[in-house]
Length: 475
Ligand SMILES: Cc1cc2nc3c(=O)[nH]c(=O)nc-3n(C[C@H](O)[C@H](O)[C@H](O)COP(=O)(O)OP(=O)(O)OC[C@H]3O[C@@H](n4cnc5c(N)ncnc54)[C@H](O)[C@@H]3O)c2cc1C
Image (cartoon, rainbow, N blue to C red; front, side, top):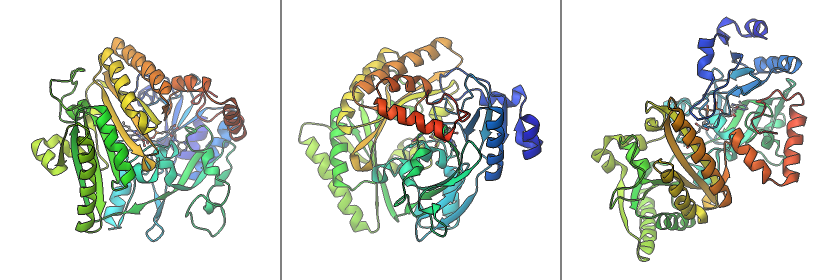
């Protein structure tokens, strides 16, 4: 395989020494490291096709990877070793259609590359940005059904995929969506059968997508980010549920106060809050075409806060992001997207893990209470990030730990807290996304047998030799 890859990609397209492979052995999480045999950097669809033909022939595991920040061990080789297919050099933007509001991109296009492109070309369009670092793949986040600051309006990021070009395990090429018909633009996924789903949330186990048609959204000239401090989860999520039904916000975030403290430079906030501290803060993004529209939207927001205040709850706000940045420049990280939450990725210990789940917002308050108790009992500050999605039909509830990877006892504590959080959240009606293998095992036991069988049959049909990201869904 090594010589084949060198012939195909050139010597600088292949890594095989222990030193070069070291960064690929692990990710941010507590998941035990594992060794790949090789890393290959591809730049074209044809190279991906040739490699998958060879890999099927030689039964070589192939792990598609971009910036490897999925927080779930999904780009690690696993027990069988194998070839990590690094897609970072496939980073071209092939088309941006301003009238029909879509872009055609490759997997390596990062949030930063896409934003720079839109700004440089002065295009009145934007995209959903996740809280992931600027140099991470939009494409991978969409394939995984991740969430962004447009998820409240438009759903998880896979909903923005309007067509895919993908290489199957046998090297053949497929196009999905309206794009599959010669001469038709990638405007959407209907009315043909929606086979894009065969690649979404399969975690790189059914094919390697090489191009994505991806929806962009209008950029409005006026925007505000408002903050409210809140004093218990029930009040926080009551406001969130009511605001969703008013449809005035582009994005709503509910973050626990330890998250704010970390953002402001407290590296490890004490698990138990100080007397009188807020418990959460809400951030609300609002956009408008004209000042009058903004005024109406902000007054609707205030009326919701007033309604819940009348129920005896306390709120402090609205505080504008500009004011907060003046008080503490570290809040700049929250001023615009994409952002770099370095307090999570660059804190010295190297470890970052979470249980990130999707579920009904009506259960967020209970989820936050139960999981705060679990995190505090294990000695971790309750760092919680939550956001409603798809108009409020569901949302994300995520519990984050940072830790020292060199401290074996702390790594074990992370495993324990994650196991307990997952069990509690699943019991409360939440499902983990970007699911690591260990969590898949728990999930599978509760899955409808028909759905599990169909998922296995899809995998078998698309990857009969089982070479694509083996084991990642424990199928
Ligand atoms: C600080 C921080 C904040 C984050 N915030 C968010 C957030 O707000 N929302 C969110 O959803 N996520 C978030 N994430 C998770 C993660 O960063 C995002 O999912 C990110 O977009 C993943 O991009 P990546 O380039 O790292 O993908 P990778 O981790 O390299 O890949 C992710 C998965 O996709 C598969 N894959 C990659 N490319 C292909 C392809 N072309 N074809 C088939 N399979 C492929 C891989 O095998 C893997 O299973 C965050 C992560 C960090 C570190």
